[in-house]
Length: 201
Length: 201
DNA sequence: GTCTATAGTCAGATAGAC
DNA sequence: GTCTATCTGACTATAGAC
Image: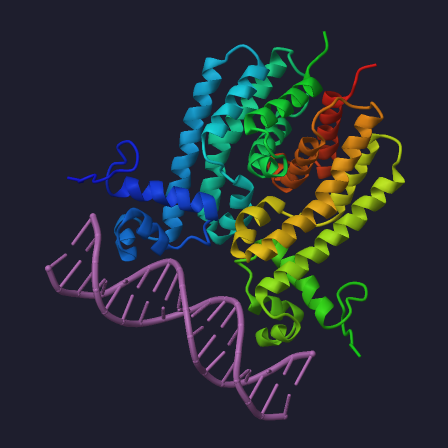
């Protein structure tokens, strides 16, 4: 029976789930290689060696953390898409709002810096997971907008990649542009993207 | 007098310059933390300890490598901008072609993963250097296009960040979209961007 | 300028008590 | 499930010969 003394937020359940939460925050903000098992243990409030009861290796912990995170994004994205059936613009705004409500993924760093340190098998798992959970759902809304005749025929995969790269570069962009909220930046860019794609009637 | 036996490309001069070349390639492809001084020394063909005759620390080597790289990009960008005075679209295509002719920078990974491991002073140096060499020149061409009345009034900093984020995500994007050359992808996205920005006459 | 040798750290992981 | 203690290996950097 977990005691839950001064639990930081919500339930936060005990054991494994608490480790996943703290590890996610650390991996997210500093990357796989830089974060040590010791730091994760400290954040959880246990000893470094105790982590190995729940996860067989740092690598497996990292994979579990990120599969969990990608799945959460899949749920979030599908939910906000479901609420905005009508048109591409409002769907894009809703997805952008979803991403802004979550900590950034830093997907490019993950692919470039973290994944090459993992087994080929784990790299493949995470790549497939990110594609299913994030890339594919966004591709779909562009495809559907094209089927409705709302936008021009540009490869949906490119548009999804384009859109995601803007989202991902937001943390950096907002340090270059002072005093403009991220929401405003992303709205401005969605407008440009949409104007560039729409079919003038 | 350097001997230059089997020099891989061009002059490649001896000593310090050879180290910078090899270190750049390694840091670029695997990041600051992952690359070891031993690997760099192996690539150059000397012993690990010998690197410390030319550079006082791994961190200083990393800073020197990247300042040199950013300066090279500044020259390249200013040169291709100079050749295409007329309009935004051809300037963007020229800059994109320049970036595609060079190995990717992975700027987001650098900011997110590498820089936090450096001294505050070195982080500031590299940040300023990247801004001067890459960000500012691209901002300028958007500003000038607006002054010519070629495109709408959208913050040039956002447009530069947007454009660069597309360039940076190209290595990843082209793994998701098979059999389409990077040139074609970037041209398609520049067209969308330009259509979204131009002032219909 | 480059070498050998090594100091000094710190990481991930395991063994076994409780 | 969590602990203490420890193994093993890898890395940056220094000392000093040549």
